[in-house]
Image (tube, rainbow, N blue to C red; front, side, top):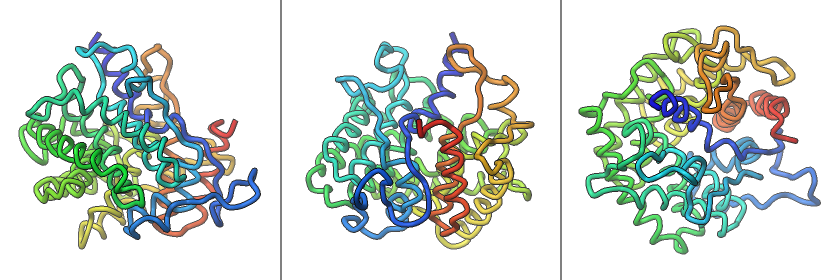
Length: 356
């Protein structure tokens, strides 16, 4: 049973990416099947770096143009639709982040509400001390949830729909702040983590704490987040590898770089910004070196998603994480303006089959 929980939690890393489908490429956000441009809500948003990145052509096309995750009637997502309260997964409920941001950018309030419903399903199970009884992985599971939910609420709060959903944002902000503090207590204080050898988890924790701190106006969480960001930076090797279990992994490195990119644009300042940008530049270049022109991924030597080293809950060998890879490339394209990363994100997306 414990082995089952471990692999299921690992697969949960991809929950927010499963509904991704898009057309990628430089230029204005135009649907090639439509007569005119898609109305992206960037003009309705405060021009923060995070908002500019997430509403950019590259990221919008990769994640939000068609992206949507559909929960059950209660708001439960993934295995939580059938899981008992004694054995569920908070991290799956972060899938609502895609719906909230996509709803803002596509002017779809029903989609925003659907995303918030997914958040609500998880947050309604929070106790007064910030714990989520029955949910696996008190630190990692909570970090995964907050890493997606907090940035989504920040974008919603910056949008023209802030007033309509102000009560939801205010309620969730309080609960997420409490959860973030409890999360850190489970590992005996800030700067500690539940798995020291997986680089992506440091950046995941950094954005979870940093975004929640920004959302809830909590300088303590923001200060703690810097400890995790610095650790992720220091783990990054000169050749750009962000190690997982002592080696490289193209999929999990991409997951970490999505978190790191959001942290860069939302929280990082001064020397932390400069150092993180440098680490990301090396990491993104390494990721690019693993790609062929057709978007296929070289997994030789990957420590987690190649060679059947890890399995999904059905017992199948875990393989390349296409969606995090094209998401990481798209985010870097938005940050740097480098169209080659946008082009390669499109090629990976095409190769992945998300385009049908």
